[in-house]
Length: 323
Ligand SMILES: Nc1nc2c(c(=O)[nH]1)N[C@H]1C(S)=C(S)[C@@H](COP(=O)(O)O)O[C@H]1N2
Ligand SMILES: [Mo]
Image (cartoon, rainbow, N blue to C red; front, side, top):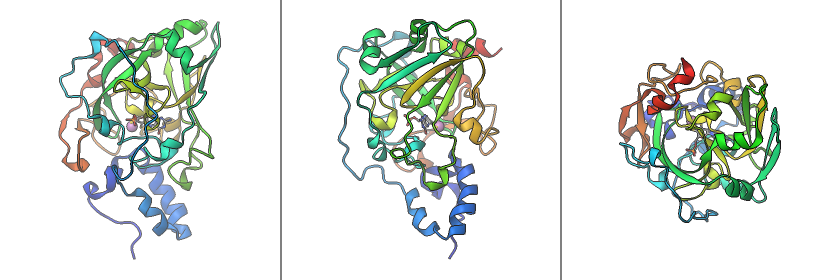
C-alpha cells in the first residue's frame, strides 16, 4: 500500500499542492506520521465537503451601513457569500479550506482587544467600544491569497488609522504587531504535526502601512458581523497584500520599535516574506503569481483565471510606500 498518492495537483482536494501549509506539512508528515504508521487515520482529514452540515449563524445584521464611495465599484463581481464564508484559511482550526464548522468553537463573548506598547494612551477595547468609537462603513475590496486564488469581498469596519489616532503612538513606534486568539484547548490546528508552529498567529505592519487609507479593521462582512470562520469579531484587511498578512480574531495590537517575527515568515521565510505585497512578477518558489483563480463553485481546477494585478490593483494608494 502506498501511503502518499502521486497524482496531478488538480486531483488533490482543495489544491493542497499550492497551500501555505504544504511545504511544512509534507516534511513533518513524512517524518512524524508515516514513521509512526498513523497515516491511514490522518489522510481522511484532508477530504473536503463544504455543504454537509447546517450552520447556526451567530451573525447580526448592521442596519443603515454607509458604503465608502471610493471602494464600491469594482470590475469583477462580488464573491457569493456562501463561498467566502465556506472556503477559508484559519489554521488554528485545521489545515483544509473547510474549517468553518470547527471554527464555531471560537469563543467570541466578552471579547477584548488590548492596544499597548509605544503609545501615549494604551487602551483595552471591547467590541461595543469599537463600534461606538469608530464609525463603521462598508468597503468592497479585492482579496488575494498567496495560494493564487482571489475573491471580491464586502467588508464592514473602519480604517486602522482611526484606532492609531486614538492611542497616539510615540515617535519611537516603527512597527505594529497584531496577535490572534490562541488557546490550544480550543484551537486544535491542522493536526498534531502543527504543535510546533509558532503560535499564536501574529502579523505585523510598518507604522506607515497601518496609517494608509486602505488598511482596515473589519468587524463584519456582507452587511453582518463576521462569522467565526472569517475571523470574528475583529480581523485585519489589507487588500494590496497577500491574505496571510490579515490576521483574524485579533486580541492584541502592540506598537514596537523593531520588526517582530511573524507566523508564516518564521515558519517558511523564503516563501512568505514580511512585506508580502501582491506582485504578479514575483513568483512564489512553488508556483507562479502571474494569474489567479477566481473562487467559484465546483472543483477549484474549473474556476476562471485572470491576470494578477500589481498591488492587487491598489497601486495608486500604496505604491509610494515602497519606492
Ligand atoms: N489567525 C489567523 N489569521 C489568518 C489565517 C490563519 O490561518 N489564522 N489565514 C490567513 C490567510 S492565509 C488568508 S488567505 C486569510 C483568509 O481569510 P478568509 O478565510 O476570510 O477568506 O486569512 C488570513 N488570516
Ligand atoms: Mo492565504
